[in-house]
Amino acid sequence: MSLLNLASDFFTALNAHDLDKVAAAISPVANIHTPIGSFVGGEAYREWMLMHFRAMPDFTHEIRGMAVESSATLAFELHATGTMTGSLALPSGDALPTGRAIDISAADFWQFENGLIVEYHLYFDRLDFFGQLGLPADI
Image (cartoon, rainbow, N blue to C red; front, side, top):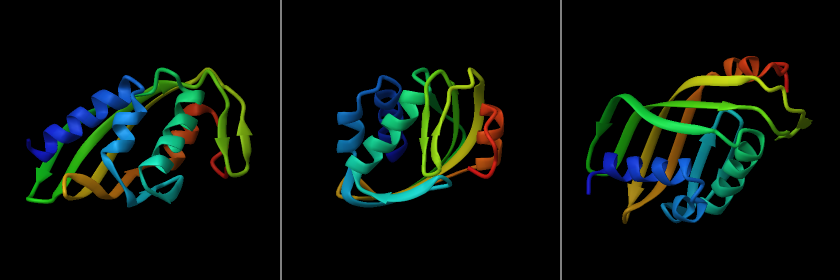
């Protein structure tokens, strides 16, 4: 199976809130870096996504645009949407629901080893994310 197909299956599971399947695709020692924080492993990723799903139960992801694949590396454009109907847990405290929607573009860079994601780098405009949700940029 191609790496892009693995990513497609990953986001199908994520959109279905099948976090067991999602966490199983990420190595327990994977380095994960996002504009909101960095952490290690599939279980930490599960908790990070649970935080987002509590805030945006309709949070969905779609691979769009360019994708570049090599033997062990995948890079692709991602599109995410959702509506903040619940609290968003942040280091500065819980942000209360705003009822506002997001429509965000992102880029993912994944490195694979033995069929698992071992490096996961997610890039998106954090200020745009918080701004669309109606939250202060300095959270």
